[in-house]
Image (cartoon, rainbow, N blue to C red; front, side):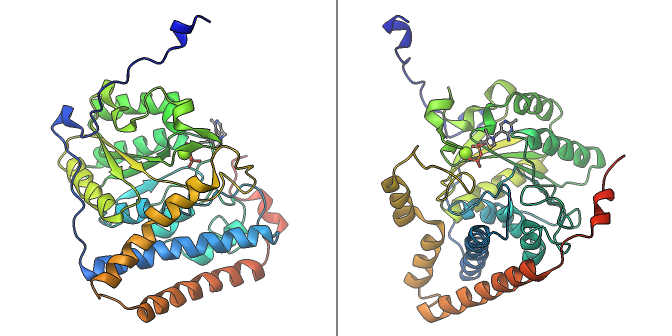
Length: 348
Ligand SMILES: Cc1ncc(C[n+]2csc(CCOP(=O)(O)OP(=O)(O)O)c2C)c(N)n1
Ligand SMILES: [Mg+2]
């Protein structure tokens, strides 16, 4: 191939402030003491739960796929803080954090990971397939990008019922290159559906970096052809996420249609449980952990403002660890599904 043809074109000027629709990324609002403590507890629950899931996997209690959310906790936590009752959430397979954020029971999630009858899908779904209509959580999907169309359908139902609820539809930077995402964008914009497309840009799709796989690496622009505005958000700062969540939910509830939030985040662990980790350096991961960690950011603010001291934070950690230990205990000792369950919950 001729060298000229391989030459990278000049980068287009960034429009990450969503100006095309008169939208700007909101400034992170200061949290009250209660909000900081709430965010701290919620994020810590996800972190400790995932650490335990990783341990149980190593011990052989969990089999198959298992994608941990460690590092990305601020995204679901900040968004959940912007929701009202009845708002819905749907995501891909990296879903444990989303379920805990939507307050599904830690026992139910962990027992599903170990394939026990007390699991949320009675031990038959595993890590990627859990749902709770009661908590407005619609999965848990293993086909990359498929949940984007389903989330758009949920938003269509809300619009049809005129119930003022919004649907958070999460997907990854890799999923953002799937075709059905754009078919969904078109319909969502055409029909002004109340859906927030949250692209969790954790910089990698399995072992492929965004710059290797994406022609447009500013994901907030991905809706431009469909007149869907987008905003880039610091997904490591739970306050920035909450501010963007407030803006986006208000936007949808005002009948203005869909919105894209690109959450700039990072996963610390491998893609799934076996990951050669050759696509990034240990230093890159370490730098994120030590400089941008979402939980440490909240902890530092709590200590600085003297809203909590080290002992109080340790007490919260102990309470969270107890919840996770209880879930793990249950998940290891609960019975496996009865063989007759092979014939239930299926369409023959
Ligand atoms: C349609 C489809 N193609 C390929 C895969 C295999 N696959 C599983 S996860 C994944 C990467 C997706 O990355 P991203 O959307 O960035 O999400 P992340 O894992 O980073 O959360 C791929 C290609 C799949 N499950 N479904
Ligand atoms: Mg990714």
